Image 1 (cartoon, rainbow, N blue to C red):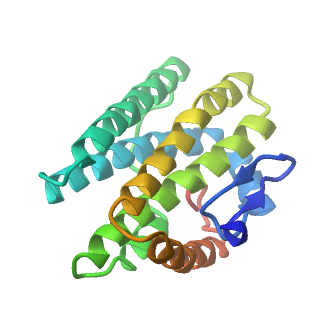
Image 2 (image 1 turned 90 degrees about the vertical axis):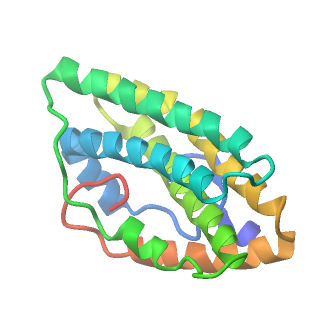
Image 3 (image 1 turned 180 degrees about the horizontal axis):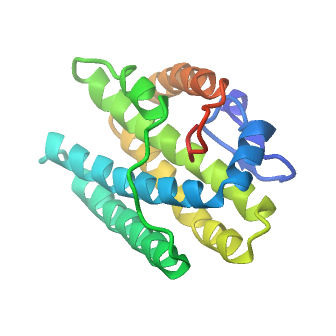
Length: 205
């Protein structure tokens, strides 16, 4: 997995799963638009909960899956509620935002047939969580707004745990060689998607 590790900007902490770090351009864009980023972050937490629940619906009797993903979904919704509270405190309404191509482009990589479809869905969900973890770390370190920096820092441990959950789910069902090979392929696609900065500030732009 060494090829899928790198170090955050200004941080000694290695981040697994990802093929490339977030750009300084993304960080500058994110820091310049704290309101839009926080609103988008709320939507990301809601979508992450939905992803966990959707997988439980697709594989309702898969051994161990509900036990792993039900707590994850609850925690994502708790994060959503925490961000809603902060938005309300600041007078920043939750509003609909246009989605960047990130999520849709990754989901188009998911294999159409089982069992490859299951593997890809775990790995895509894990990649999104890993990218969230990396970017929250950057925001926690560099955001000049103390309350926002504190929020981002408070979410780091859970985001790391979430992408580990998806990795474990994959490795319990597929060989480590198959998981690593497919992960490397999907991570390269994920990095390519983010190589072009989206025009609007988003957590995954």
